[in-house]
Image (cartoon, rainbow, N blue to C red; front, side, top):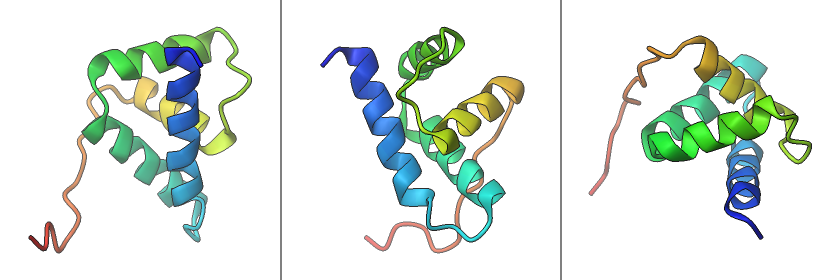
Length: 86
């Protein structure tokens, strides 16, 4: 599996986690927040490049989250209430 395929696989896994959200916009925002918070700039750019070249393996919700991040480069992740229990 190439590194690009692995990024697609990880993005789809994140999408599957957030798929349970009742509101589609909340799921997309959750995916975007996760990718912005935990992925390196290089990882995000590589996946964006894949998206621009018609990556077929990327599911709808992660694809929309990446489009959102591309359209809103200044997007700030909001800290969820509760924080780390540890």
